[in-house]
Length: 424
Image (cartoon, rainbow, N blue to C red):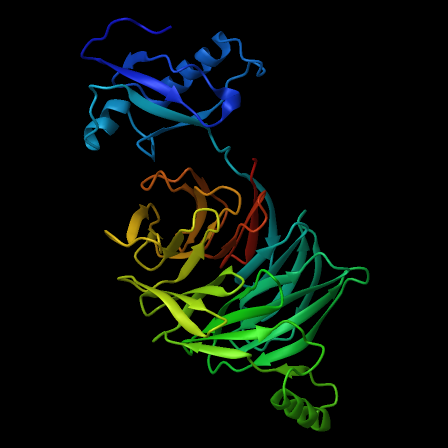
């Protein structure tokens, strides 16, 4: 199929891939200089099947990567824009395209949904009417409760697999609550109230080992708490418990923080454990901080030029994405010692971006949710064009989650949680 001559309207390319089941020879091919991704896709499918591939003969959709960027225009336009020489073979990497996520159930709530977290089988949601809800992955409502006295701002499973599952929620009422859900009886109850923040708690995350969790709030502090609600952990908690038993025998056990990390100057908007002893925090004070929890000090600070509304760290690529009011998503490499700390900026949303979340199985993929009602699926190799717009929300998106690899979850001011199935 390779041609032996070229003209000014042709370019010489070579196909390469890391997906061995689709591998072809490194023969150079001459193609029209203005070939599109559709044309490359047709050519590559023809080569694969002409080479006697054992793959069932049906058209496979590929994406194409040139110079570590997804091709989203005609080949000659990309080469000209990026100053890439055409005097040598153009190496074009091909990867099987990510299928469009399929919309599943819409989970109806009575108020804005501001927090979501999915496990393998269950989904937690938290609302502005102070309620928490438990759903099956299939979209069946299983249980709910109202104990908080303010909107729920964050929610997370501690152990979703146990017969008595546990989780934690945080609220505008300045408290965190620990919960038990007896799956056999389908009964949910709060077991412990965590007090220590002086203003709204915005966010939380549970340590990978599940023994402690962290919270961040409008009081600019990051606090560390034990997930064990069975007994006081020090004399101060024992004294508090004794006083409350006298005045309110049925009162929830009160937990105080194990430690407090100070350094932010404004509200903490997002936190995430990057490993068992390290936490990432993001703030309205335009900074990202990485903390050593064991020693109680800050290890790294990244200074942004905007308030940060949300952030997500990927253990697969060690990169951080952030979002904010300027409608963009930014990519940071905390290991970088040279050049701009912002490695890429993703532009497509029309209103401020409220939430971001990495895939936990693919180092190139993440989602973002915005006040423009759109949830977008991105590949970091394409900063100007998302892979897909995941439509369905009729009002601003307030939270999103991709903890379960096959399921993207989002919640919004349309009082719904939307589910999208992801193929791998």
